[in-house]
Image (cartoon, rainbow, N blue to C red; front, side, top):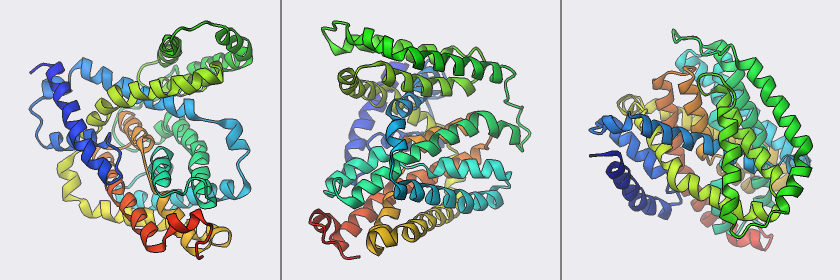
Length: 402
């Protein structure tokens, strides 16, 4: 079997299994992750999945997901976030970092910095999943829905700090026998990145005006410009490995959004996401599953249950304590459950930690297992709470009981 037939079968399975997962409110793209975990038990296609073309497509998927994070980052909106949203986000995230980080420290004998970075990477919120779920429950325009989405959006600040921690801080605290991953070109490359970013941001208004004057017959003709920025920033750092490339992908997303006029952004963004999630991201998630040690995961399932219970307890309790006065008891509990939704960002961070030899494959496998379990638990619990407490119907009329 060649790589084209293999990918054809993978995408066919993704289509069928993804359709089933969507019925229980789980994003279809995680079907490839589940397929990868299954193949990790017995993979007769190692000649394909360990080939250079497959690895390159998976790596492009990783960078494109980081590009989208940067593209969707709205710094002015984050700055204008309300006091409650900022306070709630910091309270919830710091609580998770402390309690989950402490658990991971003792479970896996990790150093405290690594345990805290791993806890924060695990605690990121998937607003891409939250939005359609809240729309289904008719809660997007309610006060509760807006606060949940506001916290999920402000969580992007923590995502940036986690990414910077993985790149610049975590390698200095590796407590394994793995070779040191710190690149001597890291600091010079960072300075080069910073200078280039500042230069572009200062000249972006002029460049944006030039782009807006372009007569583009088809919006797809703008994509070459977008991908030119993407690939240049991914490859320009000059260092080995992925440390600066991931930051380059993030910066590329931020610069592209600043560069394009609003009417271009509205049309280009769906196309970028289609290319990412339709082609490259499934291959990335398949790679994630293939790198999982499924045997270790299943034999240590109690650890996954323990982490899930602690993580969910901390999320709900901290949400309850910070939100009961503002929202009431039921709403604050619902908010805690909803904020437990995770998407691609946490998995991207876990992949970066593994590739940088900061965590072992066993730890990586356990954390992937917890992410998978959360994907099944949270949507079902949210649907049950909406039905039991009549949240969807009553919030629309602002009549929820506290």
